[in-house]
Length: 325
Image (cartoon, rainbow, N blue to C red; front, side, top):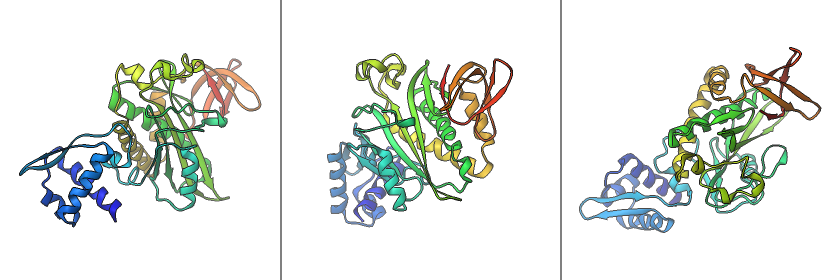
C-alpha cells in the first residue's frame, strides 16, 4: 500500500508538470490524510529530492537526487509498462542474476533491475564489464515477447537502436552501432548489451536484456587497459549527463520500438538499425568460434544476421562473432 501511494504521489507531481500541488489536492488524489501526504513528502526529501513548499500554493519538486532511485525513475516516466516496476539496488553482483530470479518468479513484463554498482558485471562470452559506482547505467530489463525462438536475437538489435535514440535525445551526441551489441562514439565503446533467453523447447518465457553504459566517468575512472578503447558520454559531450533522464528516454524509445516490432515485425527495426550501423559497407574481420572471415559487411538479413562478402566474392551469414573494423 505504501509503495502504491508513493507511485501515485510521483504520478501527481509528473502530471502537474512543475506546477505547485496543494497538500489538500494531493490528499484527494491519493485518497489519504494530509498527515500521510506530509510523511511521504518527508520520505522523498530523505531520498535526496529537493521540494519547495510555499504557503497557499503547496509543493513542487525542484531537484532530484544524484542516485538513480526507483522513485526518481517514476517521476516523469510516461511509458505503458517498461520501467513501471523497478527493483533498485545500491550494489549487486549482477543485475542479470537478479533479473533471472525475478523472471522465474513471474515478474511482469517491463520489470527493470538497476544498480549503482555491479561487482561481477559481464558482457558477451563472460567478459568482465567495469561498473564503477554512481557513474554509469547498469540495468536489466525483462521482456516477454510472443515470438518464435530463433527471432530472439533481433531484440538485441532493437535495443541498440533504442539506446542510440535515447542518447541522441538527451545529449545530442550521435553514437553508432557495431554489430551485434556494441554502441560506439568516435570509435570507442560506450555501451554494451547482453541478451539472455529463458525458454522451453517451443516457447520463450522471457528475454532478459542487460545494458551497461558509461555515462559520467572521467578518463581516470577507466582502468589503464580500457582508456584507449572505452569512453563515456561525459567525455564525448564535455559535460555531466542526467542518468535518470537518459534511462527514462531509453525506456520510452525501447517501448515504442518493441511495440512496433510486435505489430509489424523486424523490417522497420532493420532499416533503423542499418541507419546507425558503423560497419555497413566497410571491411571487417569477423571472428567466430570456429573460423575468421575477412570481407565487406553488406548489411543484415531480415532476421538480423550479418551478411559479409569475403575477398573472393563469397557471401557469408554470420550469426555470432566478434567484429573488428
